[in-house]
Length: 116
Image 1 (cartoon, rainbow, N blue to C red):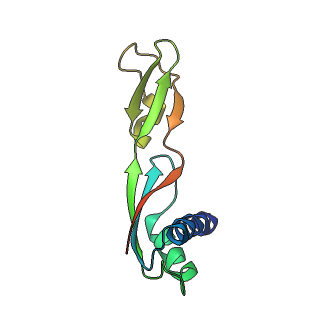
Image 2 (spheres, rainbow, N blue to C red):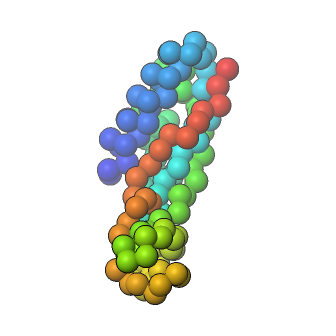
């Protein structure tokens, strides 16, 4: 159920930008959601449909892209990606270090919106 406050935040962001740019109708919103996030696209869309009623965003489609999990290797200062399911076994491809820290892949970003 944590999708509800996130969806509310997404709607606030797009409505603020729509208002500032004279947008009459939002058709779609492109979201980037980190690989480690457990936000579900279906629930986000359901909550968005409900929350956006009566606004310029009513009927807009949420287009979700999963952002990669990016890790940082302290010993060799390199960044690399890993699949969520491989996180426990992730090794730096450069030096083999196993205890890398997460740089990105946990949050969400409103990337863009399609509007008129």
